[in-house]
Length: 312
Image: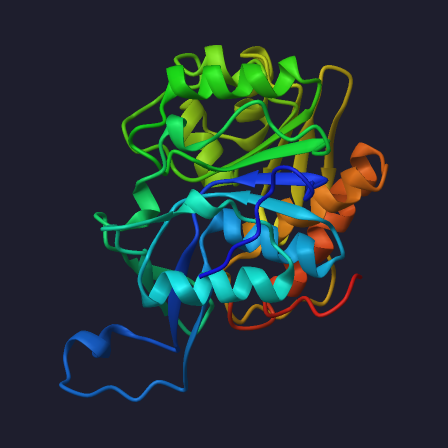
């Protein structure tokens, strides 16, 4: 398995840190799937998945030179991911592949309205990234670093995030952070040592409410701003997104005419779209509008990254 190395002669302009797995998507699925011995699904397909790999894939398809920091197993699933990265031009280090580690595979059950349920192996590579797996200093060429998998890795918690994020800012890079639901009742206040370094935070509305303990998106954004996040960008699905900075507060409406088929990867597509626009020099509102368009495109097809064939 020959791999690209992001150091030396290969230099990414955007570096994504986080999880990379395979998804098995099944659609549509209802409660009867658990009541019968055989269930006919309209569509069953395999694709690459997890937030970091999804974001890297979309950015690479948009023409960006992207590096990916992750860990995968030296197995068949890992080889499929490596082949995908090679085809898309996503840059990996050789030691991202680990002996004795099972590459994560998720089964995604998609309901008729696009909602999803996941079957996940907690012992696979999805949860295995550690601070020592992420080499520093970061490549000088990378102007933007995105930690795409906040709350995914049990061994990367507030103290480890603080160390990592401080290094990003020490090198004068833009720090973006995408996230999942907090797993251990973490609070925004407890995470202040890490969050104070973040330039752009991309929670969805449910994640933001859970982390802050608030009852509204606007209240959650205030809490996140108060613990040091510079630009809070909360993904709100069909409502668009809400932005809060020290100077601004605004709702950016979702793209119009969107028909939801599968929400897999919608948040990752939003984050990737935002980062792409940011790398192109667009202002905050422009980044958010482009991100909303990308998120809307994602929910109209099955799979996390299949919607993107060319820049929009």
